[in-house]
Length: 430
Image (cartoon, rainbow, N blue to C red; front, side, top):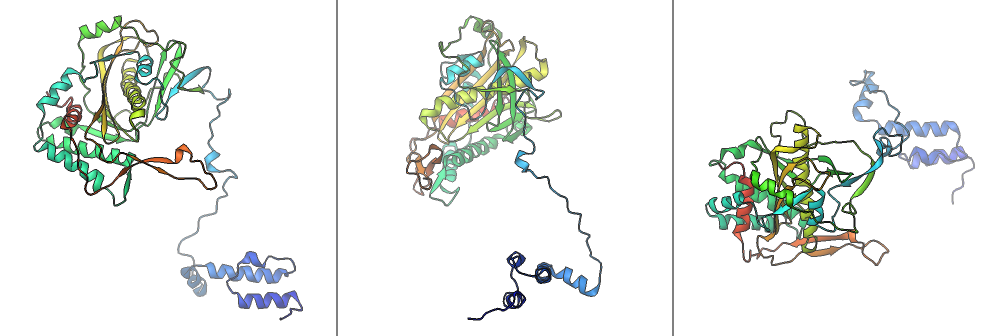
């Protein structure tokens, strides 16, 4: 075994044997400063790019001057712009506000959403009469074959994986059906006066029996148009809603499932687009995601809340925050789907007097849970277990759709797509 009599001898042999040794390895107790400096300079030379070495050998000036190094603050950017939720915040209120976001579930479902929006359920589970008339009059050549091809495209050829996430499958199915509807563009030119806004943001606020209610979030994809949708009910039918009594949940409060917040802006209404946007009117909101039959009621209630928010924020931006009955109602639509089941929601905003339960009511039509076809392979649950934990947390369960080349659309119901087509062409057909 070789013995080193001095630290200088050991450092010299070490730098010869390991020329690429890190400078941090040389910082050891016992090495002389000149040895450490020599090792650091050697490592700096090895890390220099080739063009810098050539410039130094020829005595040339650097072609590009290096910008001065800026010292970053000693805090993580994630926490540099934290919002103060205490009384020091200028938007702090003593009264609490109840928030509904895209990840809040109403346990009472549609009935709770109707109370929060002061709405009456119309149509006995059917779409409005104008939309039903469109379902019987609209036709696409070879509709059955094209709908089946679209489903096969999304379920078989969208990916080579054995399973497809339900969220991705519902999104691709929605976009495929929208492309089918756009085939009627040469016949109805108003379709070209629309735009799609994926992942848009909406915010609406109102007062309901002295409770501040606010809807915020990014629910899905919104299709906007240059012209607003026409009212779905006449004046006589609107006046008849004043006799309707809203269902309550005593002893439970209707705001029991909403989040609470003390920092908020009063009467803040933002439709998702700034002034000057060429397609300012909300047409149809497409909400796609992963859910099953047990969650369908809550998802439909979520669609009602966000469709109502789309109409309310635009009405308040036009008429102000004063409580009044609207001279012209605002109409919005919503399509909720998981790729197989479809729910069609129509909301007509008749009044801004939402604090009291008396007077005119808003209107909601709900055609819920219409199956486009019978799913041959039900959604599977893929479980991912955490390390060292035998129990599986619920957030590790992912609904999946099986991909199979031999898939057949059993009991394909084209009438469900006709409803989709009627919602899409609403406002474009004279």
